Length: 291
Image 1: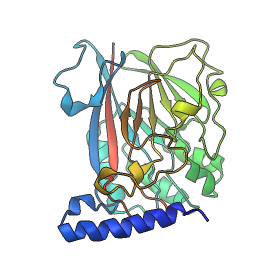
Image 2 (image 1 turned 120 degrees about the horizontal axis):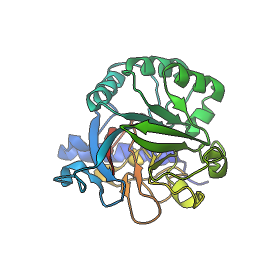
Image 3 (image 1 turned 45 degrees about the vertical axis):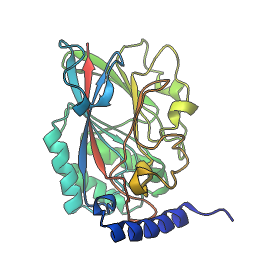
């Protein structure tokens, strides 16, 4: 029988924890109780696609900046100290656009936790979400998840696009259905979009969408935000043991090699086993430079 992901993750976690404890590198042993904010800059002409601490000044000093805060893979099993820490990071970032890229819940109990978590987050003028594979496996009807998001001022996009005007600039947000549990359909998503606009953000839970799903050439994507991988979750010294189907060749961070640029979040929660090794939970902040 093939070795299961649970077995691989558990074995790797035990072996890695023992080895790292022996040499005292506790910064590499990360149970899900630490959160970092990773900050990045992305320019509309793709000339900048990088962590912000590596850029001394905007490529275009006249560009307007839209700040995106990206949350992924919450896997809400509680609403306690750790979730309050996430909320604090979100509040400090002062987002123009807040996005959730799936797997906010993974069981029927998560329904109440999602309501409570969303009630803790300061209201945002613009907030969007997409579904992940675990929402489909949670047993909670999608219409009920949609209603929870709606009541919190978050728009759930399932093969749908929405146009916004932020700081005087029109941007388009497209959210695809999940690659594993749903039926992603870019043609359906663009049905209501009668014309192309230059600033187009794609939200898709699984990063492999970048290679597997072709968008109409009449509606090019500026960049894509995804999660799903947890950065490997068990990734001693940053090297993942295994990533779930739907990850493709992606693990975490920026991918600007071909097609639309992609950022893959390490996410915030855990699945299968409640352990992280070498993959710190992150709140992603991206300053999108628009000219």
